[in-house]
Amino acid sequence: MTLIVHLSDTHFGTEVPAVVDALRHIVAARKPDLIIVSGDITQRARRREFDAARRFFQSLPTPALLVIPGNHDIPLFDLLARGLFPYRNYCAALGRQSGTWFGGDVAVFGFNSTSPLRHTRGKLSPAHFKAMLKEAPPEPSRNCIRIGCVHQPLHTAWMQDAHNRLIDVEATAEQFSRHGFDLVLSGHVHVPYIATTRDSFPGLDRHFILSGAGTATSYRTRPGAPNSFNFIETGSHRGDAEVGITLCRFDEEQGAFSENPPYRFRRVQDGWEEVPLDAESIAARNG
Image (cartoon, rainbow, N blue to C red; front, side, top):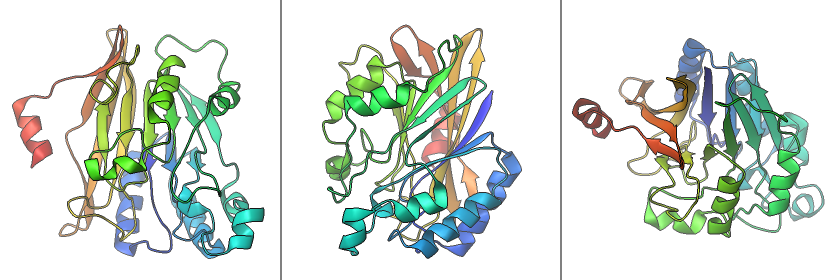
């Protein structure tokens, strides 16, 4: 079993101290194996914002951290820096713009979908997949969960956010499917979304799980979507791989994050399907 914390859109420079403290507290209580941060670490890609983010990540009790940049992690107003060294501050604080992590029953691939030539849109090409998958273990175990992480989503909870999806999204979903990905993480729109591709990309030969996280620590929340992040737990049941995803929302009255009933998924012949909840869990999730 592997426990992962998926954070996104921390936007340091706009962080809320009480939310930062609450996030640190709940993560410390769970002691995850890995923390993944899917971009927009900072608000304006300034060195002091990256330094604050690095200190926060270092304060979290985890043996491993995988971070990728978002569009906000490239300078916006400093056109010289954007053109000549767009990732300088990011790399100085956090290292690689993409990366991998392998442990237990999980193989994680973090893709950099950003570009200084684009403002907010993201894109992955076949070359991205070829380069990243060179680092894959040669003989993964039967129940190994292959996770991709990208900043911009393949699908969004709200239709008004559809323009924020990855460029050439249908072709990109097919690439993730063809290369055997089980779960794809994202952020960018500050609204969580957890489902399989069965409704959003019904034509795929092999379906996978989509898990988009909200904004973890920033005051730049959206109506009806408070600060949030996800716990991801992998395991197996009767020899079959399973994934559980728990959405954690910040409760201002309690000053703490609360956990919703988890979404549960199981691997079947044509990919992944969601395990139905009982009526009580559905009511708790929707309440």
